[in-house]
Image (cartoon, rainbow, N blue to C red):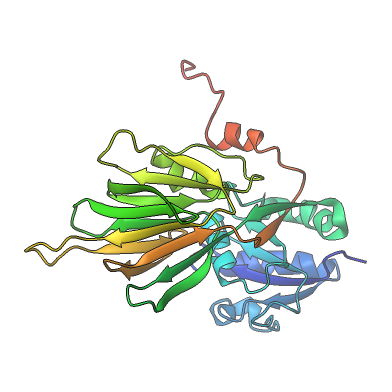
Length: 298
């Protein structure tokens, strides 16, 4: 009997040859005796999926969510997930990212083994993010797997972000913005902005300022359970064109006004990825970041 018998399937909206990839994966799942249910939000976009039942909005009727797509599709799937106890397995066409696990060409060999319990679960901590407006009303309440970013809009001007940790003042960042990242997100935008690489098994939060005015304001790593709060301070000028946005995992955004407060912490929520083997992370760094390559080689 399959360890994961009820499989929910979702797919990247813009995937090339999407129907072909879904049809191939669904055929493998059915040959194993799995019950296949499809993403209700995207079932009408895939011809071969229209004959499949949809999984419920709370994912209570599936044992595993299979994501056909890369890291961006995984971030979208996590954002839409209501039931964090459902593990995720990604099947990607082409290259493997930091989160994506197997390719479509490997599916026929690896899916039977993974669904029969030969894989391992890789836990990743989520960042709980809220926005409180200046008038005290709630502006946002959700989760991020990689990071949230407070950044300026089209006009390039520095902003002030009064930042506290557990209510204690840390600093006022005078910068282009601030990245609040998880260890999973430490190899994404935060890394590009000069942040550290942090092992994904750790419960930690990384604060990486974007182009800070002060040379002493460097990235800092704090315990994950700490509450980070950043208050937006925008000074009025004769130009009424300054915009600030909050972006979650690089996919959704919302405008922020002066006096709005963004809070983030790890409050115990996490998700699990089904892997073919335990990932030491160091091998991923060597492969994806090209660590250890001889730069002098022809």
